[in-house]
Length: 130
Image 1 (spheres, one colour):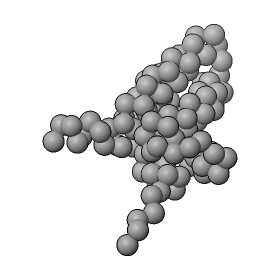
Image 2 (image 1 turned 180 degrees about the vertical axis):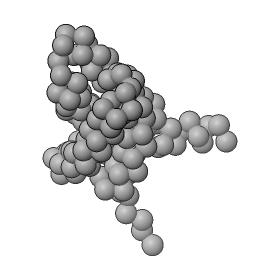
Image 3 (image 1 turned 90 degrees about the vertical axis):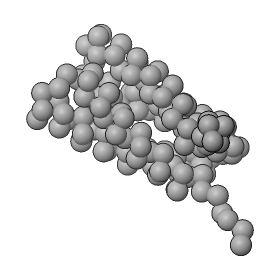
């Protein structure tokens, strides 16, 4: 049972997504420390994360060759989740008073779950043969 869990796509998504998130949060933290506006820092983090995330998802999780159509679909999914990210981030900072960094950590966790399902359904969908 543990072996099945460790080899599941969702577990691999959590691992690669966790790594991607840590790298992106480090980038965000550095940008905030050098006084980049938190929305711009999140945008730069997003762009970096999409490229890195697509490569990890295509190769490591869903075992697809990297191609332009999947990259366009992946980017479309992440543009949608980017909008959700900014809305939640701004609400946590402006309405709830969380620090920019803590708000992005919370937001990243919420958006990660959304992203897994959107990527699985819309980007790397496996057609079942009946």
